Image 1 (cartoon, rainbow, N blue to C red):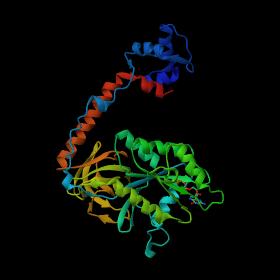
Image 2: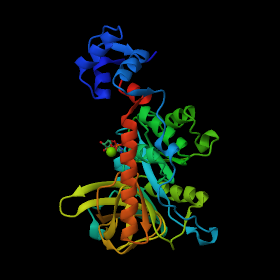
Image 3: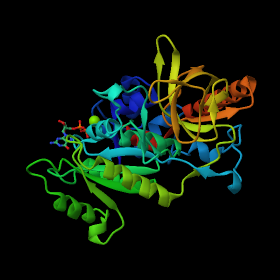
Image 4: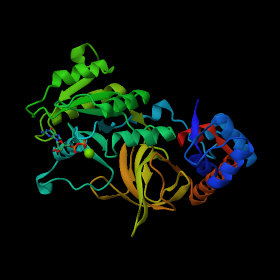
Length: 373
Ligand code: GDP
Ligand code: MG
C-alpha cells in the first residue's frame, strides 16, 4: 500500500502541518509530521478541507484536444527530401560532447582553425554535399522534454558507448528513449584509442540489451571511433547519411513553418531568444508565430554559424528573436497569417491553462500525491 508523510501531504494540500495533524486526530489517527499515513486516511483528511482526492490524474489533453489552430496536412506531391536531424546520447563521460566537437571540427576551414565557436543549440555539417543537423541539447533531456510534449525532433540517435567502460545505466536509458520514440540508433563505440578499449565486449553487452549490431546478426550500424583523436568521424557521418536515406525524410518547404523549440532563454539585450528547429515549411524574418503561450514576429534569425539569415527551410535550426515570452523546450512553433492571429491563439491558450489550473486546484490526484513520496 502506498503511503505519504504527513508534512509532504500538508505541503501538497497547501495547509499547515498542525492543521493536518488536527484533522487527523478528528478522524481518529495519531500521527506526527514525519510519520506516514495511508491513502484512505489522506483521502479522508483531504475531504475535510473540501479537496477531492482522485484515483488518477486525467490528462488535460484527453479532456480537450482542441488547440485553437489546425496545422494543414501536406500533399504527397509537395514533399521534398530534407536533411536528417541527429542527437547524441550515452552515459556520462562516454564522450558525447567530445564527439560533437570532433564532428564540428571535421568541417573547420583554415580560416576558423582552432575550433568553431558555437552560436546556437544546434550545428550543421556538410558531408559529400549533404547536410546533417546535430542538436546540442543532451539527448536524454531533449527526449524527455520532447516526449512530455509529444514532439519528435530527432530522426537518428547516436548512441555513444566508451569502449573501456561498456554499457552503463544511462546507456540503457538512452536505448529505451530511442526505442520508445522509434528513432533508429547508430552506435559510436568511442575511446578506441584507449589501452583498455574492448569494442567487442561493448557490442556483446549491447546485444544483451536488445541492440543488435550488424556483426551480431542485427541491423544496427556501429562505428568504432575516437572523438579525442578524430578517428573514423567521417565514417560515422557517412553512416548517418546512409541511415537517413533509408528513412526517406521529407517535408514541404513551400508552406508556413512548423517547428519545435530546442532551447530558449531570456537575453539581456535581445529579450526572449529561442533556438527553433524548422521541421516543415520555411520560416522567414517577419513571420508571425505562435509558440506555446508565447507569440511574436520573427525579428531576426541567426544560423548555426552565427550569421544572420532571412529564411530557414526544413531541418534547419535557427535562433530567433521577437517573441513576447520565453517559450519552453519542446514547444511547437507555428507560423500564422498575421500578428493578430498569433496573439489571439496565444491568449486563448493562456486562458485555457488558467481554467485548467482552477479546475485542478479543487482536486488532488493520487499521482501527484504519490510523486511527492
Ligand atoms: P560526455 O559526458 O559524454 O559529454 O563526455 P565528454 O565528451 O565530456 O568526455 C569525457 C572525458 O572523456 C573527457 O575527459 C574526454 O577528453 C574523454 N574522451 C572523450 N572521447 C575520448 C576518446 O575518444 N578517447 C579518449 N582517450 N578520451 C576521450
Ligand atoms: Mg557532455
